[in-house]
Image 1 (cartoon, rainbow, N blue to C red):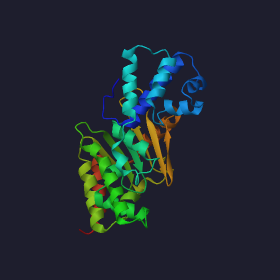
Image 2: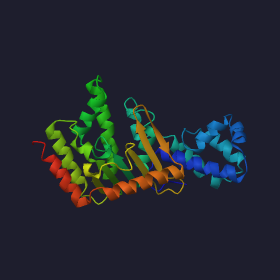
Image 3: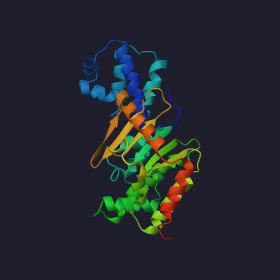
Image 4: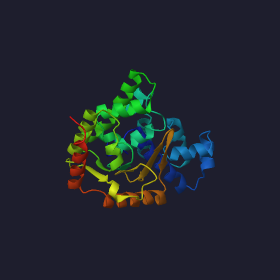
Length: 289
């Protein structure tokens, strides 16, 4: 069993966990009994099946035996997937500036085929220029030395490598007009950032829309969010919600459907691609070169 796309260890954990859950349920074995077989708790088995923790190859082997998977042709791909799931992600060298709660998102973003986002306060990270990102980092982390900020910016720029892949994800963002008008950096930096958005919007895989002030209240007043979709059938859509000290990952179908409908409504209320260029150009004109 191998992933078809460039999914990292986070996605491999999710795929392996799903396979193990299906095998367990097919044999009618409880999580309690599964946990007992690997000297772990029921909650540990639950986290393994959700792909929230790393796997020990010995534990996977013991679970496969418990579930009656004894044929080497069936065991080997799953054990290989366990090894791959424990490989470090590209961000491992930056863990001092990438919080643990954000690392699963990086793995999911890396494997997504569709990323839909609504952003209320800033230009989305995937679409930021280096200078704009630096200004955002400095504002949010006052007191950190230059070296820390440099590494945070490097991490954000590394995320954008997915846009240069031969098969990049589809990125569809709705940005609140307030985020574009908020002067988080010097005028020249803001102008360059806005021009960068216009250029990105011309790419076949990127759609940028703006929800203007004239719309008034709308369905996403609660704040920013992202929805990620994958082409692996074992990985459901995920909604990502970030706050100051952590993040929530929503996978329940009802939750995902609610956010998907909200995103659809935002898109309907936002600018068309041609209107997007015009409104961004208008905002950029207020920033002197």
